[in-house]
Image 1 (tube, helix red, strand yellow):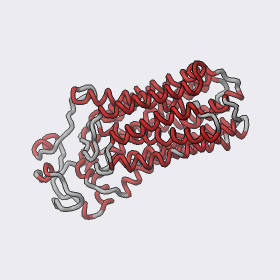
Image 2 (spheres, one colour):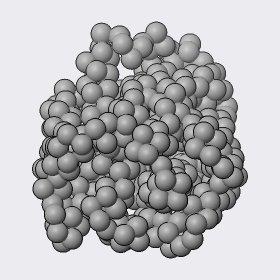
Image 3 (cartoon, helix red, strand yellow):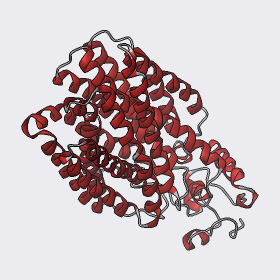
Image 4 (cartoon, one colour):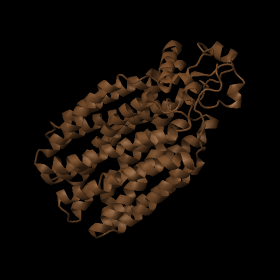
Length: 460
């Protein structure tokens, strides 16, 4: 083995004559192969965002067309999150059992078909059924996508890559805003055409995802060493000949022990003593950020129409506000490798808390847009950091379970908040509503400091 090639290995690794496949991936630079994986995963991520964002515009349009009550509007929004809560938990478990790539394919199929079927809904009840099924697919895909990309990303840029992956969410939400503005608000059947548009690229993305590689770390836990080796060699070839590895490889647990290659503890759970504190902190953050994000952004179009703005005007405001997500992700991607995961997450959550207060006090058009852009900027930067942190907290054997369970618990908040917003508005208007959201963001910011800092550390 040429120990001078690529990035230097650690002293612990240098004492061995072998690198584990995960260590070989860790030393690689950003390559075309990794870029392709990031891109294909990002397409699915953007489509998920488009669907989640689109429902806020559809609810605003149906509220006027079908004369929906606040309760009916709330349930159309919340039922999807019920599906997402179940989907995230089951998706994470399945990802650790049958593989990350297989769960990708299954969830996209469920999501795509149900989104298209939603366009045919003729009543609130039928729409609720389809939205629940859509949620199952969406909820399962997101934590699995971040897990797969994390397991291929080198440790020196892993956090940044996952924030880039999360940044596709902004593209999807912007696309949803454009569809809402130009399609949903364009005619009485605009909401149906919006859902049709949401289904077509999702089904196409299924084909792309089938060509994505399976996680090397997952394959090794299932004893599929030759398949894992082939994938690693392809990534090394993509990096260039200087990264070719000629040392011995691990093809069994016995090899790992003999060659002193560290392996994940197969008996570890997310509630083991060493994992318990990080699991609790991660769940608190997921719950609080879901509570505020979905409470605010799924209701903003409807809240604006309630303030007297036209449907088209409210959609225009939402589109402008959404554009601020992109620089939020950009700054988060920079800071996460500069100052670390915890500080970056805490800064953006604290900024979200301040922005929520400002939005609750906003009255004029420029105040609504300015405060909304700040909320969008900080909140989506926080989401990027959170998705980067989750997969790094757990070993391969429970990584999908850990990220999926946290996401599933967080979705409970996204179910509750849309149902609670009408009551918050009745009790204290926008001021009280966004003060509550601000408090949730502040709690999440504090919980971030109970997570271990994983900047520059390898995952096992």
